[in-house]
Amino acid sequence: MRARIYAVTQILVGLDHVGVVGLDEARRKADLSGLAEREDLVDLMLALLAEDNYIHPKRVDAYRVALWREYLRRRGEDFSDFYSELPVAIRGGSDEERDRLGRMITSALAEHELRPSMTAVTAADEDLELVLEIDGEVVVRGLPTLNGLRKAVRHRLSDW
Image (cartoon, helix red, strand yellow):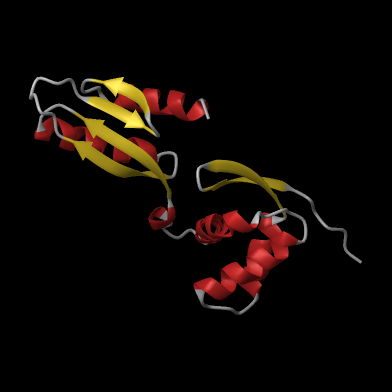
């Protein structure tokens, strides 16, 4: 009888980093299963992981997305369509500034396997300062450099 390996892998489930026991083994078994459909592969991995991990019933959908993302990562495939979404609001400034900041935040979040769920709010007064909020908190005011924005995003994400 072969001993089970209880390695813990950190994955992003929704916006939470979660330790999962046995993910590598579940992905390996999914590869060897002969299953081809996404839902079938995720069902198999979820069933295997449920043996050693507590998965809250309200979080099952978020786990399903996370497990599929991890499966694609293992296979070296593009998984950017399965990034977790983060609420982002851009307020004030000109249309051009909001568009530029929107492109910058999309790029900065992609480095963390996140994508913005974007809301852009035009200013009643064109002189209103440009403000970027992530998950309801102000991250930057004005139009930063890309490196400055990356630093602000890392700082905001580390606060979680």
